Image (tube, rainbow, N blue to C red):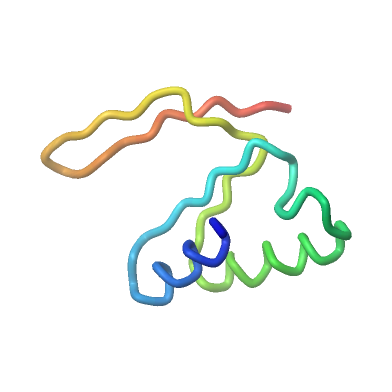
Length: 72
């Protein structure tokens, strides 16, 4: 559901960053499908952050900032 909503918002002109804790999208699917999906999302302007988890968030006058921890 997250990938679909990310793509909709991006196509409406919103800056979108998709954060995924796993090393790839669609963990239970064939890796080649996940790679193709990632390519499509990036072509739509979506910033993909894989192997990452949100650790905190801050709101301010200029918008929101999400702090991530990246896993190797």
